[in-house]
Length: 125
Image 1 (cartoon, one colour):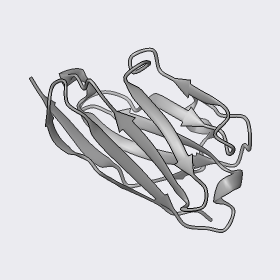
Image 2 (image 1 turned 180 degrees about the horizontal axis):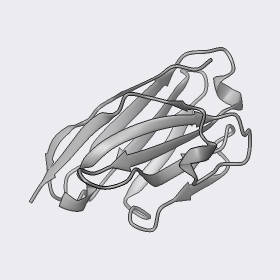
Image 3 (image 1 turned 180 degrees about the vertical axis):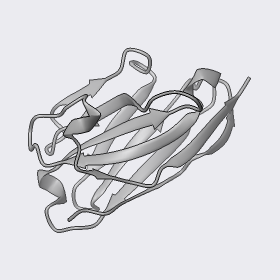
Image 4 (image 1 turned 120 degrees about the vertical axis):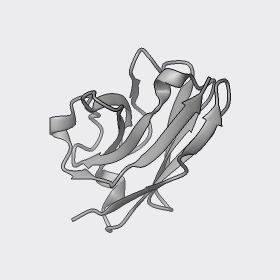
């Protein structure tokens, strides 16, 4: 069982930055692929980025490539999402997710077994 708690959301102006954190419980955090998804009002939850257990493999949605960076610290059971050059269209609730897939990250939300409660990000124009 893995419990995930996100933090770091808030209100920021366009062009600004935020860093989200996701703290995980459980002894086997390092064996989990971690992902970030987001859901804007009236829209489906969409993939943002994911990272393998070693950090050696990462995938990004085209919409955030070059602006967002995912990283993880297995010693702290934490995954991070650094968001730079934020745009109003990045406004959403951001969710952290975990999947027991080792070195094989997935962009598909159905592949993830555990989810956090979400943290809201609002980007003003």
